[in-house]
Length: 132
Ligand SMILES: *[C@@H]1O[C@H](CO)[C@@H](O)[C@H](O)[C@H]1NC(C)=O
Ligand SMILES: *[C@@H]1O[C@H](CO)[C@@H](O)[C@H](O)[C@H]1NC(C)=O
Ligand SMILES: *[C@@H]1O[C@H](CO)[C@@H](O)[C@H](O)[C@H]1NC(C)=O
Ligand SMILES: *[C@@H]1O[C@H](CO)[C@@H](O)[C@H](O)[C@H]1NC(C)=O
Ligand SMILES: *[C@@H]1O[C@H](CO)[C@@H](O)[C@H](O)[C@H]1NC(C)=O
Image (cartoon, rainbow, N blue to C red; front, top):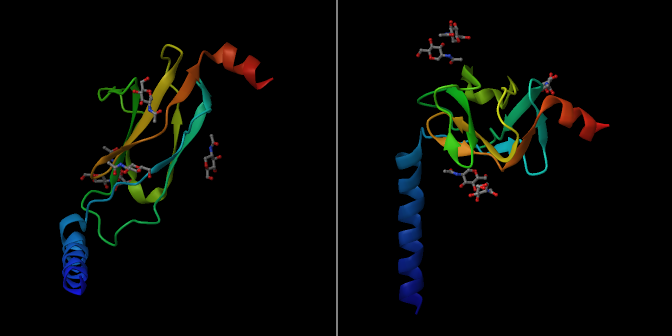
């Protein structure tokens, strides 16, 4: 029993010490906004925010790109923003003129991508009514 606990501890140690080497420069910042329940009006300016508290000291690619996805399908041809520092933690985007829907997500790319929770894009007029 003690031996297996010791072995487990050893292998955990091995994993922990191997991890920083393997993922050292790969930073996948979790998107914190938009989130479920958010409604973005077409044409409005919105902030995409992400958590940079786990950012490593060195990042291979500090250039971020923000892509809109609908139903999990990324619109890679029309990024909402690019060429900003992934260490900023937020970036303002203008909601493009896309069909209304509640299955939109924002995908943030640096070294790798992370997607937001699903949120809603509403036509400019409808969203204005909802906000009233
Ligand atoms: C993206 O962020 C979420 C929330 O923090 C996290 O659970 C998930 O593992 C991340 N995805 C990747 C591919 O790192
Ligand atoms: C986005 O966040 C920045 C910094 O907090 C703020 O200055 C800016 O006004 C925000 N923009 C919008 C559209 O909320
Ligand atoms: C977002 O919506 C898509 C398509 O409707 C669904 O497959 C996915 O599980 C949803 N994701 C979350 C985080 O709710
Ligand atoms: C990217 O951003 C950098 C720093 O802000 C700027 O010097 C450069 O001109 C930008 N490149 C493009 C293609 O916009
Ligand atoms: C993005 O990458 C380009 C080319 O590699 C570089 O010139 C630019 O300064 C970078 N922008 C930022 C904000 O880091």
